[in-house]
Image 1 (cartoon, rainbow, N blue to C red):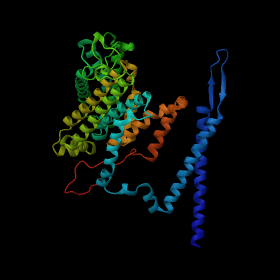
Image 2: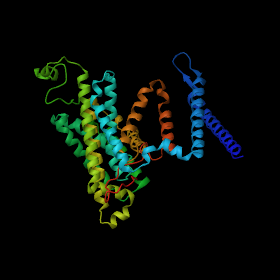
Image 3: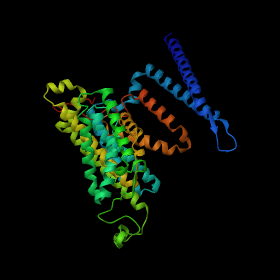
Image 4: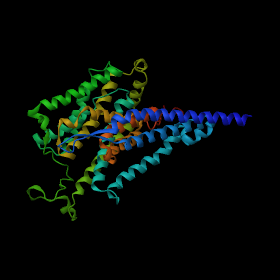
Length: 439
């Protein structure tokens, strides 16, 4: 009797899963027909015609139906066998934070080792190394914003402003004073930190949505100033001729200006344009690793614990004698400093900057990397940056639907992983050797 009842419940559960999948496919069909099924073809200058691409719609609706059905069956299996479900999805990750930390440490070292040898692998073309360089820029920006958002709990929608300050600082100091990249790099970071203090001081009493609106306005103000202050910033035309970094005074070009010695001449190797790409890759890799090391060390210091305490309860911080003003200003300044470093590298990598490179979309992209990776999780930010940066590159055939796919991916992650890809962090401090669970 119990077997028959269980079979009936399973049958009803399967039917409900199919109905739910069919409903999701119907909604996808209604949305996909105007967005992807109909397009305007204006390739012929003599006439404009409407093109129907229902094969794309069929593939999309089928994928939604299959994904929703598999999710329903997984939930049905979880209800029938909860213990097996926990083992399947969580396994050893359900143990203590110290065990998870020991498990991920070799993974982090392996990723660093892979990043070091990546430019020399057989499949690493020039375009691939350049894409990896772009990924590392966003990883560094994500780790810098993580100080403000993930550790201190301050929602910042204008982080691209510090990115722009670092880029323009290097470009202007190189033009006015002839500073090289290595000489202007610390200046760019200091100026960006100064702007972080300027932003942080007026918004000390703001929280949540109000803080987000003010930081968003600050980012737009910086972009508009760069756009309109044409005698200094070049206005919409931007700044060009930004010098590239050299290796101990040796330029990585075919010929040196003034008849000096170049990098390939000094080492006696043939000139290859990829040498500059690889050198830029190792520069941003070193800057990103330095950012990671610095933020991890700061998190274990009293200032880092003050950031996390401020994120959890500001009133309790005041009761403990912690000054929220200094804590917030330090978070804004340090996070902005890393953004300034990344901006200086961005300027020297391209050799040209303009206000169009520092729009709100960049701030949204960096914030999405921090949120989707799991706020406070360094490894999660690496994974999120890799996915979000490389996804448009590998899907160039679907370039017109890039933002649609990007939005769908974000919605899906927020539904199934609302706390980010990696939802745990190693505890900042353990009392008495206890294995505390990470929040």
